[in-house]
Image (cartoon, rainbow, N blue to C red; front, side):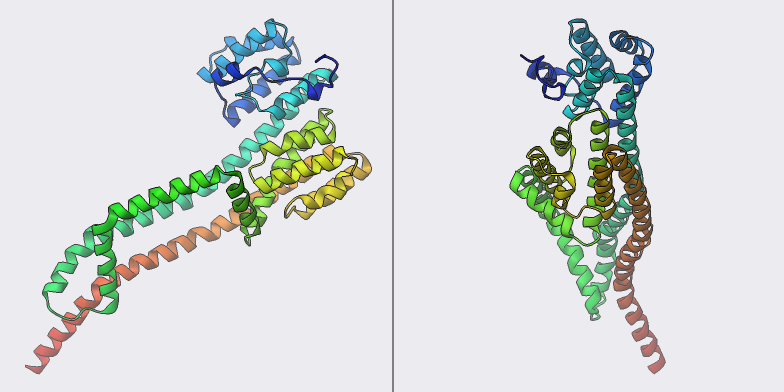
Length: 370
């Protein structure tokens, strides 16, 4: 009964118990493993390729995944079914199943490796670009807290003992310093409660959907997030269409890989409309804030019968635009962080110096009068 089903509808899970026990793979490890399989399957059978990789020295997770896959292959399972579901998502296993059914497994593995390596490269660029501003922000906040907790109280005691009236800025900084020292545990508790509440809220689908939709409406941020989701959507959809999966099934498998709930829901709605007979071009407006380049190339691809290649072209162009935009924004964000946090440090220093300058002025006036 199962063999009569199309390849994209055949069961490709390893089983609940095995999937739970199997280790997971990170994105880069998954891309490397797929690339190695693509190279070896071009010159030897799949089972021998997996056995060769399993004998090579590597990480514990990769070795366990390869050993489990090899045992399943020896038991007669195809590669798409043999791969543990905990290490390889459904869209990857469905694409591999398409490659096995069409006899183009090595080609499809290479395309999968290209897609996964592109995703890993994009993630690496974003993380490396964000690392310096985040580190700068944390260091600056640490300096401000240290000044409020240790430096300001030591000088404040001398200022108060002088008996001179303190400027408003000095009194405000002293009040903030006193509040931080007296109530730091309440502030820390509130921060923990806020983070836990946010984490629990994001686990509820309705709250996550509301937050994702709100983020897409934010100026600047919404366009950046939409471009990020568009790259992922177009690249994976192009890979699965190249593997021979029907458009509706490819859209159905693409949806769970998207990070934004609004894009996931839109992809599922488009899949339902395409399955009901609608064209992709007519359903593309359902994608929230979809980049114009993606829409135009998808419409041209569907009209010309080259949907997969043009979706891949759209993903490449949007990826390049996203990287350029991220570098520009972060290049402007770094000096902005320095100016804002440097200004806060300057206010604290000014609050400490103002009463000292007033005391010096009064002392100079007293000496001049005498």
